Picture 1 (spheres, rainbow, N blue to C red):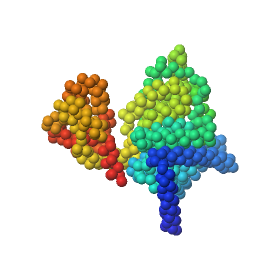
Picture 2 (cartoon, helix red, strand yellow):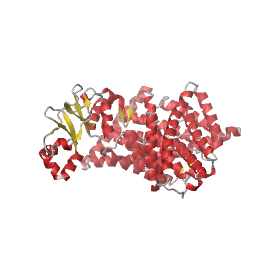
Picture 3 (cartoon, rainbow, N blue to C red):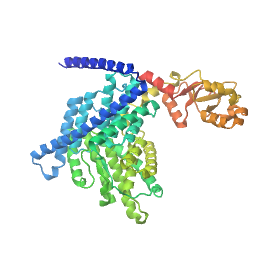
Length: 589
């Protein structure tokens, strides 16, 4: 029976792809160019994912109503008023994961990153839909997870299915998956810039111009559709008015950013450690313990700030609580998130990070306000800065955290505090722990994926597999006037400068060329070696590509000279990002 169903599924997929081929051929006959076609598909992906996000949010409400009516029919003690609905939700969620995905632990943001880097951006939609429905029940029952993760994965799955319908090649399929993830995040938060930043930082891992425009278009389309359906019902609620002195209080915000990096690591490590502690227990015991503990926490904290469903944090109530209460709430949210996932729940970890950061920042703001009453420190502003800091540190995606809070508040006076806190938190968390909360899942499975690329593949390949052995080089004794004809005919961005013995003495960049051209005396008289940057470090043929990529990033260079290991200045060729990723693509295919 199973083999017959598989055969029918393959037949339907083949016929669908044949139809996609005919539609694509029709588009090409209309004279639609490749770039316009990609933008059009990005717009389609954004709209479809926006509708899918609306459907997911509606499923959360339906699941909450179903669980509430079911529990109401069974009399339970008041102490179990929170635990009973969550226990039922976790039980349904576990059943959906068991029957719909065969107990897969994938179909999450980390798995999307893995699909883009290793599986040609192929994401199977069936298991994704099962996990999305499981997430709806988890959220509807009061689980401490976010709606944004399932929305991003659902968007990626829909985009991957659409791309395979048209039999797009791997690179274009990756672009579409990035578009789907961007539309899912932007739809969940109503934040199109943050959605685009998330896709570029986490899923695609780069800001290449070929993918930037489609991702932005899809993100805007996703946000537009969900805003029509949801209005301004954002998951974070803030006061309409609050005071802020961005410049005077930068020291305070910098401190929150530094401490936020530490809190981000505690959140990240804590969520995983709780799951590790509970993993040896039977599933029913994990489920029961999670429901009881989270129910107790919810009974304690929900009247204050504890969120349910897709409404998660109300900063308008900050002033009603002490700093100690808010610190405890931050820890309670961390504990509840780890327990929800350990108990079989499905959902994102992005929204809980916002809540942990908001309550941590709010606690710091309330404490400083009481300690320094004359300084006019605003707890709401501190909470928003704390949100950015914890998200940036936990996800290693500082731009996403910065733009998300900026778009939620629509307050551009916050730009300096948010940028400062996000950058400092990212630096602290990255120095304390190399993995983000997403790449931790991959690292535990032996996968080393960072910025959209599999580090294991890059470590396996060497410079000898990718370098250019015939680069354009410049003689150190030439003047720029002599070298300009050669430079203009080359497609390189930087040029090794060598002496008579083919030893590298420097690297001439376009910035150096422009500086020299601005001063005609330099272009006519000085030799190239005086205009070039001194050569300090290259790579050898035996170095792996991961080493080469990190040295490029550390130096901000476009290319590195490839030199002999024995004669460290003797030029053998050059290597840049283009050569590295071309070799990577060949290997993963």
